[in-house]
Image 1 (cartoon, rainbow, N blue to C red):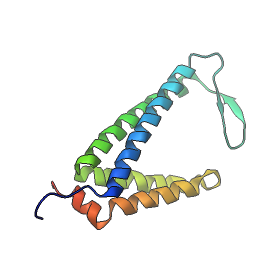
Image 2 (image 1 turned 60 degrees about the vertical axis):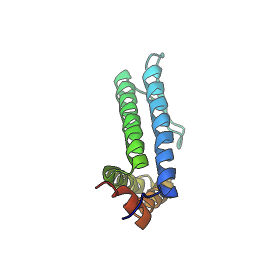
Image 3 (image 1 turned 45 degrees about the vertical axis):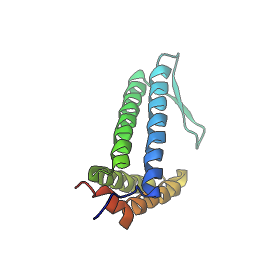
Length: 137
């Protein structure tokens, strides 16, 4: 390849969405952790409206996992931004996992999860995106 490649618009969109997801995960993680300090913390299922009391461990564990996932998303967005081959592989794997888990949630928005996962897989595997991710390989 001669010259420098320009980042495909699809890769730019995915990198920006990764940053948005990272911020949302970190905020939600801290919300989970801080809600454990309340009296009688409950979890409300938005689909059925049922509520259940949850333990502090549940809130701390899930909050911590969301924060870690948010930090991973920041790292992954940086890799996608600079064109790392590692980013393409990890983004594709996470999108396929999202598609698989979407089949378990078909009645609760799983189709949206599946469609978004397919779009991400298609975007990061286009000819231009592959060239972008493999420029330093």
